[in-house]
Image (cartoon, rainbow, N blue to C red; front, side, top):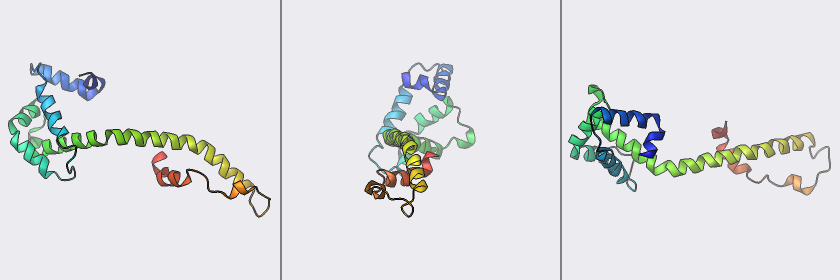
Length: 152
C-alpha cells in the first residue's frame, strides 16, 4: 500500500477502487501474484500470459471496469500485455537500478577521464618524453566506451 501511494498512478488506482467501494484490494494482490508467477518463465512470448488471462477472465474484466479500460481495449490481449509489463518490470527492477548506478559511476569517472585525455593530447609522445604510465591503457575505458551512448 505504501508503494502504491508514492506513485501518482497508484493514487489514482486507489481512488478508482474507492469509487467502486472496493476496500478489499485482493484483486490487485491476485494480479500481482499472477505476475510474480512469471518470474522464471519466458517473458518474451505473450502466449502464456494470454492463457492466464483467459483462465481468470472475470477477474480481469472487473479490473478493466475499475481502471476504466476503454471498450475497444477491453480484451484479453490488453490484460496479457499488462501482465507481461508487470512481470518484466519485476524481473528487471534490480538490474535497472544497478545499471543506473553504473551510469552514475561512469559520469563521475568521466570527470577524471576527460582531463587525462586532454593532457595526453597536449603532450604527444612525438614531441615530449613521457613516463611509461602514459602508454598504459586507461582503467575502465572499455566499460566507458561500451556504455557511453547511455550516459549522454
